[in-house]
Structures are given as structure tokens and as C-alpha cells.
Length: 179
Image 1: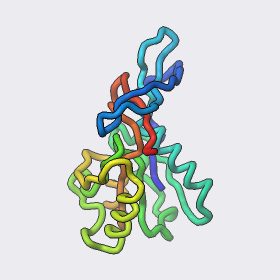
Image 2: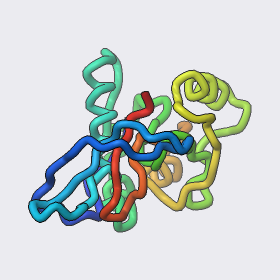
Image 3: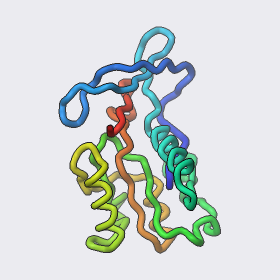
Image 4: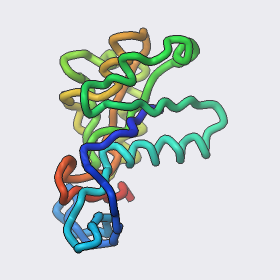
């Protein structure tokens, strides 16, 4: 499991409030949005605090799993580029939680193909995502995130999926769970 700890928001004070906001299907649903002490939106830091939270949940639920929490993804994937190869010796694949919305699946990242089409990995991932994502998964290209560096360094499949943040990198960013 992979996520990154940095965000584009300069978050000093954050007051998280529940609000009904539009989801990807245009339906208002309960969401989390952040405000400063003056009542102005600040951005919730969903990119990629939501990914960190997802990894922590999975660490709590699974007995055999590793998690990597990289630094400086927002400025060029520096942490993943300099990751310790020994940590990944027994890793079979990497799943990153760093895409907005509830439908994105990164197949190509910064021009690098993350997994082979119609492989066991692809078919298993597609079945799991079809069963669990709010919207139909869309296999896409993503500008960059940490699995790009991991795929360049290691011979295992990688994938990046939506983790529920919306309007990322804006002060109106909010989080809405898949459920």
C-alpha cells in the first residue's frame, strides 16, 4: 500500500465540517470540507491525507501487508525515487491511493505503463474495483504519483486508484467516501 504525506495546502488551522456536496453522479451526499477560523475554505489536504488514512485502515485489517508513506510527491516523487530497494524485496505489487474522485484507475503514469493489460493482476484488480467503487472504474493516464517511480525501479505491477477527494489542489477541496 502506498500514499504520500505531503499536500499542496498550507494548513495551519483546519475546522472540518460535514456538508452535502455533489458526488461524481451529480447527487448531493455527505462530505467533509475544511475551513479556517475565519470561516473561509482552506482545502482539506485530501491529496494525499485520504491515501494515508486508507493505508492505515488496511494495515489495521490485514495481517500480511506493507505500507510505504513517501515524502515530497507533490514536488517530483522524491521519496519514492529514493526509496530503499531492500524494503521492496518481497513485494508482489503496489497499490497507491492517490487519485481524485471515485472512479479513476491509473494504468499509465507519466508515460509508464503500470501493469499489463489482461494479466492476472489487471483482471483481479478490475473485478475488485467493479464490485467496490461507487462509479464504474475508468482506466486512465495520470500525470504522476509515486507508483510511477516504483514501476521504474521494480519488476512488479503497480496501480493507483481514487480515494475520495474532490476539487483537489484548491481551497474548496473536500472528501467524500465511496459508500
